[in-house]
Image 1 (cartoon, rainbow, N blue to C red):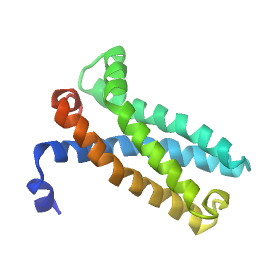
Image 2: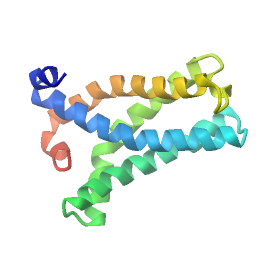
Image 3: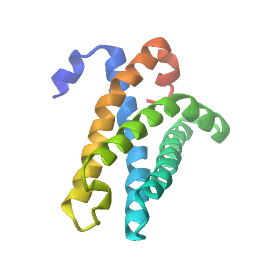
Image 4: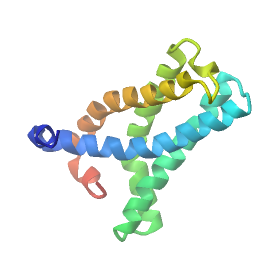
Length: 150
């Protein structure tokens, strides 16, 4: 696997790293949001409306924290996270939400049902696959913006 990764061009490797980093923050927000709203018995639209802002919050927070550890101020880190992660998170959340809505019964599954966890995991994989080329496009256009924290 490492050999395959080393064969990719610099922009593609950077896009994969950036997308994985973003995916971690989005996943935390998405799983937390979907789990809380499922436990509370919320409607589908409310689940999505609650989970998406959490995905943004945790995505930005994770990236900002990473940049803070490298010496950036909170204000600079937040500004850079917003600049580098917004398109990535929008792409992931669009794909993730569409995927969840397209699986019959997925949004109605309860936490103890394996389909609940399968649909979350599968939607995040789909979001990753679609978002890597999006991030690669933006990294190729402005690579220095994305290399400051990954």
